[in-house]
Each structure stands twice: as structure tokens, then as C-alpha cells.
Length: 81
Image (cartoon, rainbow, N blue to C red):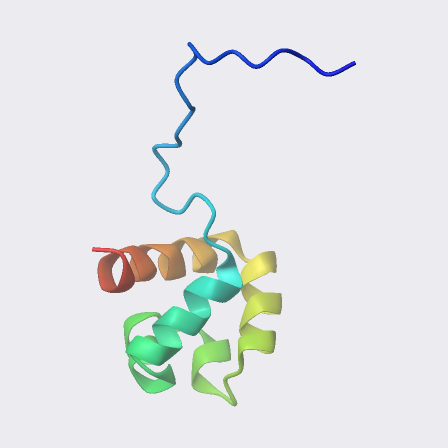
């Protein structure tokens, strides 16, 4: 049975500015806006310096929360604000 729709309840909105933004989308936006060289200058991680690619960066950032946090902050500074 379908549940009734409650039109009186306000839609929930996340306060997280990264809500709905995938890591891949973040990387693509940063590469388009800054390029790999500038990204490597701002966030010193090997996957941005040596033979950078979206694929290798995704693999590394998914396993390294501290590096991912730096990339998220860079994204927020450069591409969202």
C-alpha cells in the first residue's frame, strides 16, 4: 500500500554544501577550472603530480580521507563560492 503524502511537512534540505556532489564531479570541475598543475600546487598529492588522471585520483581519494578533505575544501573555495 502507498503511504499518504503529507503536504504540510517542509521538504528536508541538507546544510551540507557538498550534498549531491560526487567526488568525480568535484575532480572534473577542478580540472576544468584549475588544471592538474594548479591542483597539484594547492593540494600536494602524488596523484595530481605524477601522471594525473580522474581514475587514479578517484582511487586514491576514496582510500585517503585526509586527502579527500583537502580536495573537498579546494572545491568549495574554487567552484562553489
